[in-house]
Length: 141
Image (cartoon, rainbow, N blue to C red; front, side, top):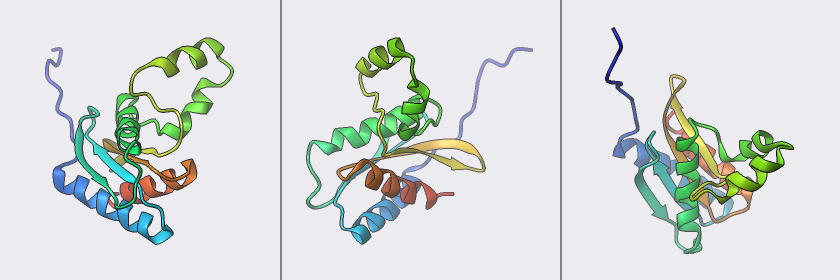
């Protein structure tokens, strides 16, 4: 018989808060104020934090990073350059999609190897954003 309903596991608000706490602690530790967004598996925002001093315009970017990861089944945003490779049509076409971010700072949250959400961070360098997002995701692993 064909299954007509699928059950998914996703982060709760408490889980999102834990990720934000870990990410913001890491950001404070390296002295980089950032925006942190946590999304569920459908890319819907669960929780968001803008640290004191974080750039206002980075807020939507953090949210879009988390959305991008969820929308592409857990592909971290730093993985996009490898995906695009030398495919010029893809490289020039897909970047025009709303909310797609192809630079570092968006990572999946996996529990027992299952995608349960995503963390997006913006406000530092690409490397700092990735490091901070990974600290948030690892707090739930």
